[in-house]
Length: 370
Length: 264
Ligand SMILES: Nc1ncnc2c1ncn2[C@@H]1O[C@H](COP(=O)(O)OP(=O)(O)OP(=O)(O)O)[C@@H](O)[C@H]1O
Ligand code: SF4
Ligand SMILES: [Mg+2]
Image 1 (cartoon, each protein chain N blue to C red):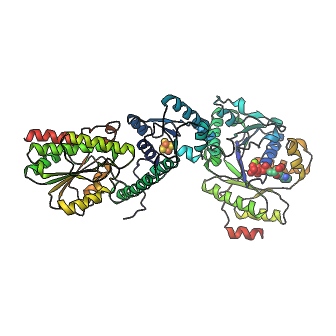
Image 2 (cartoon, helix red, strand yellow):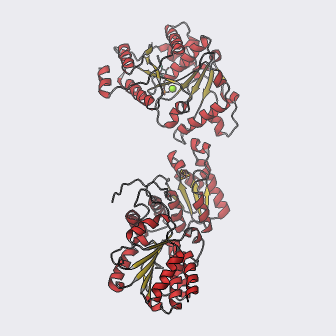
């Protein structure tokens, strides 16, 4: 595979990646140092997740004369407005190209809370750069320790490899697709259950997206229960509550609680919510050791991170939230690929499992066929 | 009025672009032409010798204050009616001077009526074209022809040669080479040869003379302070030559080896 391809579909930038990382580090405010329109969509979504994202709103004058004062002013302003305990400052193309120094204004603003400075722009081919720089800076100001930093760095490398192998970075251009018809796939799952086929339900979710992917696990378990086939299902999920940044651990805890409450047993806990790039190996080993003769698997979250080695004989149904992920999954050999469109926004700012479109469809189809 | 001449003078940093530009501007004004000089250097030193040593507010000074810029705020009348404009720039090391030039030029284009009434507009640009902003006057279609200033020394010629390559790349014709002498041996011969080999002509040979610097120190052009000097006559001839010039070429830059040979 050619790793030096130029990917021409736009994708989330390092700036956005840095913003989400700051969110996971539990900053109260993130300041974008750059033009007012930069990353506005994600900025707004993040507000739903409880962090304030503001901008220094550099205009033409800012580009020419620099934005030192603007940054100092905004830092003072947010300090008064939101009384934050932890603040992040993120660079943008505009401010970085003109050589803005963020450390000086941060020093000058002299807030008495730690400030994580992230010197990034959108021009890195790989947006994990934004995550790394944010984590490095967090390490410097003592928000995370060296061990967690190294762990995160390792996970990022693995995440990059996953995307290169079978993900959105695997091809110069990947056309987005809405995937297969959910209704039909729901019928198929019910059929399989009725036939007494044994199935694996694997959630390998990235962080907060687990709030919705977990609903698919719940729905399948509900339906299997109704059909009297609950014993034919084995659940795996990456919801280890002891791994990851504080916020991510909290998500795992919330999801695990909800699953318990709904009576869903997770037979195999395959890692932390940030371990989606490596949990695939755990899954692979487990299947090899214990579940090799299962008939089908429903894999949600980041299905392309699960190696095909021991699942290729099963009927594979995968659920992703990436419309550009459909094609690679089909090529890997997944028979049915579903897309939960606009999943991410619905999983921000929540602490309970939220209904998925596929879960809802499955429940409805099950009602009809019982 | 004949067709408006819009020229820019390029050349290695410090080679004498600004003093040549201001003296040519003054000489053209003496000939009765309407002239504007637009300094596109953050140093803002293009028009100072046409204004008795005084500095004028720059376009970017006003934009920085977020003022509504009007023509009379930025276009000043200097020696013999020469219109003087300085683009200005951010403090050195801060912000983006290149973007500044782009914004200032666009502003000037929008607000200035005088711009259209001139017989000659000279854009004085800094020596190092470090980014796209510095060729904005060309790219935005404000400059129609370029002159390149050089001495007979190797480095200025090297820079001149590079500039010629750059001009061809952005489709801007070269109207001539001007030699600002540094009193090196065989200088006129070297620069004449260089000019012809890239496909152009030597427009003038300006000697190196102390009087240029003496006038500059007092805040004047040679044309104003020492109109009877011999070098004033050289500027006068150059001014006439520029106003009459109606040929230009797409220059063909020399290869490094040839350039070295030329100066050997
Ligand atoms: N023919 C000349 N004889 C003597 N001194 C000269 C001559 N031409 C220019 N100078 C002097 O050389 C110095 C540099 O000239 P000038 O500022 O015009 O250069 P420049 O090319 O515009 O520089 P920059 O690239 O920094 O804008 C000035 O002090 C100027 O007076
Ligand atoms: S180009 Fe860069 S700075 Fe501008 S909006 Fe896009 S990401 Fe932001
Ligand atoms: Mg100059």
